[in-house]
Length: 500
Image (tube, rainbow, N blue to C red):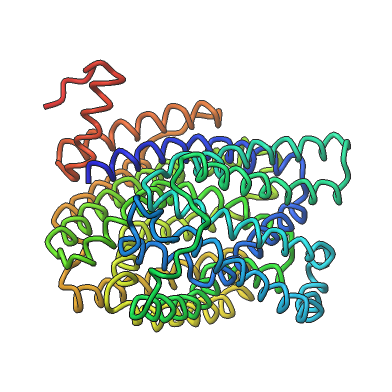
C-alpha cells in the first residue's frame, strides 16, 4: 500500500494541476468565450468519442489488467502482450466505422430537432473515437507498469492547455467554428501520439507478437473474458453516458452546456479516486490471482476509508463555495441553474469513491460474470430515472437520476461482494469519518460569509481545510492519510506542526 499511496499522491498532484487549469478553462474561459450551445457541442462530441471507443476496445483494458500477470516476462517481451492490446482495438475500430456509417442517418435524425449543431459536426466522432481508444490503451498499459504520472500529465494538463489556446484563437476570431472544432479534435490526436512515444521510450513496449505462447486454455479464457467485457461495456457505457445524450436530445445543447459546467465542478471529487483506483487495480488483480483474501480485505477497507476522507473533503470545499463560484464566473447567472446538479452529482461521486473498489474486485474475481447483471441493472435504472426526472426537472432531474442510480448500484454491489468474497469496505472509522463530515457541513451552515467572492473562497477554504485535517488526524481515521500528513509536514513544512 505504500507504493499505492506514493504513486497515487504524485498522480493526484498532476490531476489537481490539470484540474486547476480545467477550472480556469471551464469556469472562466468556456462561459466567457463560448455560448452554452457551443459548450454542449464540445461535451457531446467528446462523450460520443469516449462512448464509442469503449466498444471499439473490445474489452482490451480489463483483459490487460486481469491477464498481464500471466504474460509478465521481461526476458521475452511479456510474450507479445503489448501487441495484443494494440491489435484488438484496431479490429474493434474497423467494426465501429462500419456500424457508425450504416446508422449515421438515424443518429442525425434523433438530434437534429433540439440539437442540430451536433448533427452538423457528428462526423468528428470517428477520429475522436480512434484517439480516445488508444489514449485509453496506452494509459492503461502505463498503469499496469505503475507508471501513471506522465500519461496523466498529457491528458489532464497538456490537453487542457492546448484547448485553452484553441479557444483563444476562436474567441479573437483568428479561426472560425469549423476550424476550432477541427483543432479541438486534433488535440486528442497529439495526446495519442505522445502516449505512443512514451511507452516506447520507457522501453517496455514491443509490437512483436508471440502466438506460440497464446495457447489453450489461456487463449480460450482470454477470448471468453473479452466477449464478456464487451457485453458488460455496453451496459456500463449506457449507464455512464446516457444522461448527456438524453439531455442533448430531449432538452438542448444549451442545457447540456450548463450541465457540463456543473458536472465538471463536481468531477473534482473523483480525481483522487481515479488515481487511487488506477494504481490499486493491478495489486487487487494479483491478490485475487493468488487468493490472498487477507491482503485483499485490508486493501478494500484502506482504500475505502481513504476515498471517503479525500472525496468528502473535496465535496465540502466545493459546496461551501458553490455560490461564490457562480458569482465570479463570467455569465454566472446563466449557469447558476446547475447549482443543484453539483449537489446531486457530488453526492454520487462521494458514494462511488467510497464503494467503487467493489466493482474492481468482482470484475477480476472468478465471479466476474455477475457484473454483467449489475451493469445492465444500472443501465436500466439510469435510463428509467432519466426518463422520469428529465421531463420534470430538466438538467437537475438528470443529476438526481444519476445519484439514485449510483446509490442503488453500489449498495447491491457491496452486499454481493460481502456474500461471495466475505469482505466489505466499512469499519468504525467509516462512521467516525461520516460524523466529521456532517459536523463540517453544520459548521458551514452557521459560519458567516464575506461579501467578496474571492475573499470568501480563500478564507473559508483555508479554515475548513485545516479544521478537517485536524479532525481526521486527531481521530486517526486513516493510517495512510496520517502518515501522508506527517510526511508533508516533515518534508515541505519542516516540522512546523508538532504532530505526534
